[in-house]
Amino acid sequence: MQDQLTGIEAQAVAELRAMTDVRSLEEWRVAYLGRSGRLTQVLRGLGSLPIEERRTVGAQANEVKRRLEALLEEKEAALRQTELARELEQGRIDVTLPGRPVPLGRLHPITQVVREICGTFQQLGFQVVEGPEVELDYYNFEALNIPPEHPAREMWDTFWIDTGEGERNVLLRTHTSPMQIRVMEQTRPPVRVVVPGRCYRYEATDATHESIFYQIEGLAVDRAMTMADLKGVLAEFARRMFGQNRRVRFRCDYFPFVEPGVEVSIDCFGCNGMGCNICRDAGWIEIMGAGMVHPKVLERVNYDPVEYTGFAFGMGPERVAMLRYGIDDIRLFYANDIRFLRQF
Ligand code: DAH
Image 1 (cartoon, rainbow, N blue to C red):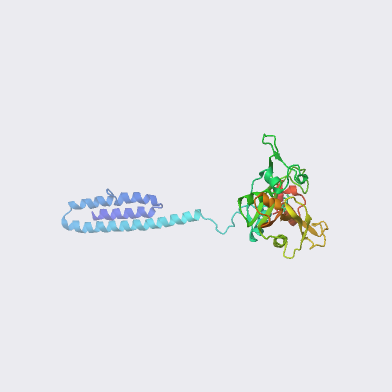
Image 2: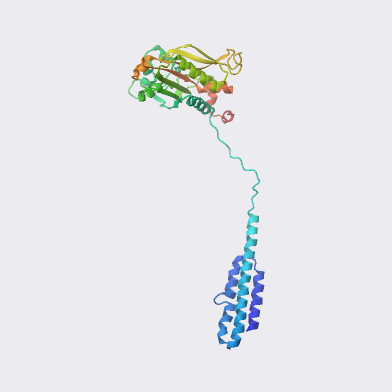
């Protein structure tokens, strides 16, 4: 029986040594150490031996069992180690390879300029609000002191919307000024808002005119506001936007909803006023229209024009972008040409 044990052990060890994968270890374990494995069978046979022999053979058998179990454990650890090494080798990635670049999107140049202008006014205490692009005649014209049939309407060629009622009442807003009225209807002074948004005009397009474009409106109303507030705020805006040394020029202009009305210009940032192709040798660049809110406009929204005064302004971000980036045709902004847009 002892020989039998030695034989079993030798054979088991040899088989185990030859094994190359973890899965076959289990078969080996069942064959030798399992419930009806060869070693277990020997141990079962012990009972039929005389007591003396039973002791020695029993001890030997347990020794063999212990050694085989230890070997199995060792072998399993070794195999797992090689398998892991192989997997690591096969699935190896070179973490030093440069990554594949993810193409970055960008904002449309007009969006960038709109955000910059609004951001500058936010720093000056203005709030940003938006309004409807489909407007009523009342807000776009009438409440802004532009009555029906008034010749001032010719300043805005209008897309009318056919409501089926035969009346001209609904339109695509021709400017952002109607939001002056909507904001004042909803709040009491002090008011400080800027209103970015799309506007529409029924006109032939050329290098400086589009039928769809943006405007940014501004409105500030409070007690004792004067032309000095208008000049101070707009000059500060111009310097923050176009350079700390900018000079600002105010000249009379006419808009029905302000009195007095002005056009606001800055000295050209291309030539500091000497004359160049940006300013067409004028030395000055017009950047917006503005004025003191007309008393009739204030009355319309039940603001007492004796107690409250204010100023308003309106500007075109396309124009700002064209001047700044030297773009000579406004139509490029909306042609959706990726070669153009990629440059910003
Ligand atoms: N809404 C005017 C336009 O479309 C621009 C404008 C001028 C707005 C003077 C104003 C202003 O608020 O005070 O041409």
